[in-house]
Length: 137
Image (tube, rainbow, N blue to C red):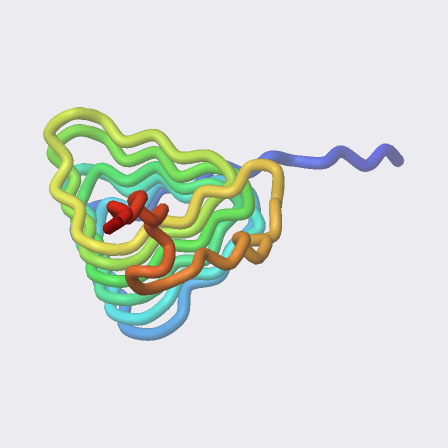
């Protein structure tokens, strides 16, 4: 008996409405409406008719529909033309096509670099070089 690893590709059409948490492995194309959260170690493809009200955590996400929530991807977020995204995104790679509506904060950190403290800058007028003072004789 042999075992094979299947990369399952699933589709949930535009007539699907879900309230709650959606969890899956592999790849999913979602065209319906979801009010809740999506969690996967796979790839999520949101179709043109998809409407998501909630947060998404995935390996990779392709956005074509509407999302009102935050997206965290371990690898890549690809936001296609005409998509609407209202929420913060965090990924190691990000692609945003022309024509996207996006309102939120973005964190893209492919090398997982930690912020370092910047050198302290003197504040106030003392940071300007002094001009020479005229001598009075």
